[in-house]
Image (cartoon, rainbow, N blue to C red):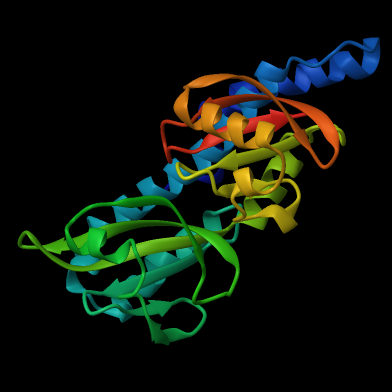
Length: 254
């Protein structure tokens, strides 16, 4: 089981550095380093996604998971849920798409129609998929791992994390100034994470000017950089970098 402190991992050093810079800026009216803020933002979210995936892997490797029995999976899943700072929804799915959650047990819905489910049945992990959760109705990201028995996929363990809760974690742990906007795009340019929750799951290039469309294409095609574009009637500048965990592009805009 990954402890709450261990979940911070390498992100802790970056968060500490950002806190020191923020304190200096408040004390001496200095300018915060955008790169330090971006690195802290990306590290914090990446670490949370990776930790959740690793926790699922640990549970999936146990005899309880191999049994495919809900009664044997409920306790380790509850322990996992209690350790996540995002209050994530943990679920266990059978190979037929029926699934269980901690809150309600067997659900009436089915996961077979999810685009990611065939990948799980093929023995592949899922990380960073954007969905409207069947369990909560919230805009969420899915992390899931297949369950194997004698080399055959018997089901999957997954976690659905509300994106608003991830944004709240960023607000709490980093505390960007009000004029700084943080957001993340998936590989299709869809807004996975945003400080303004009303923009979640919108496609960024459809929200504004031609300059924004051009900026999004540049952000998706490069590992890092700076872009300028018009948004909501104002000229904006953003620094960005691509994630190695979910493949998201993280950005800070001011």
